[in-house]
Amino acid sequence: MKRITFLLLLTLYSTLAAAQKWGGGVDEEPVHFGFNFQYITSEYKVMKKAGWRDAYFDKTLNDNVTDSLNAIYGRSSPGFGIGFVVNYRLGSMFDVRMTPSLVFNDRLLNYVYKEPAVVNTSFSSIQQRVQTTVVDIPLGVKLKSDKIGNFRAYVLGGLKYSLDITPGKKTNDDDKAPINKLLKNQRSYLSYEAGIGFDIYFEYFKMSPELKLSQSLNDVLKHEDHPYATPIDRLMLRNVTFSLYFE
Image (cartoon, rainbow, N blue to C red; front, side, top):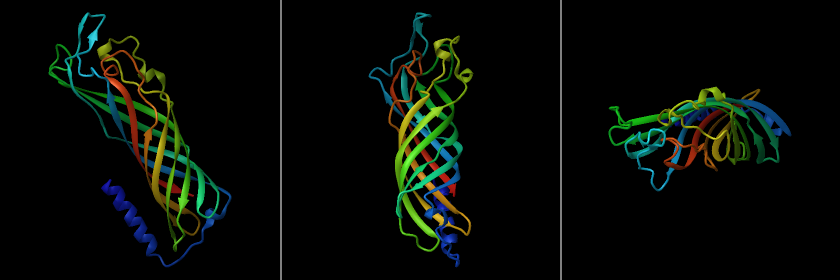
């Protein structure tokens, strides 16, 4: 986060220091287009069931295959995305924007057990990694400040529809024992988003660094009967996205 803040301040300083003042350009067009690059960090928010600490009982083996749990928590993991911009001008201060993107991101969930985590082993924690390739389709409203020189600030908010297009063979674990199953997510979900950014104007284009927060509105966990899904009541997904838009 410190690196992102430094990049924003450095970009802002270099722009305000420039003597040449460029026009609004694409801001005056009813509809304009662009593209973006994204750096993303994702983290799960875990809501547990009442008996989440209980050891997992394997009905096939008729025995417990894990010890009881001490903790379940999400870890932040990085990713990246690329996408397009479709901007519709509502007025001098308002735009409606759709920014479809292709996002590559892993999601991490850690399970800490009383030793041992798995019967007849010596380790006490297990990490589940959910690999995703997601098509994000955000739709939002952008509220802009007055333009000062080559600079304009804005805030935005809206909703995002996400569809996971990861090939099914990567998560096919039908022939595996419960202890070797994979944690899985729903293929599609909705999120709300809010962010802040800056439009920085150049002679032929504008660049917009943007920081955005989002959280899923619905449970993203695919509920199955195995040690990693059973203790969880709901699993929400949080994203922090730093984007560079070129329009």
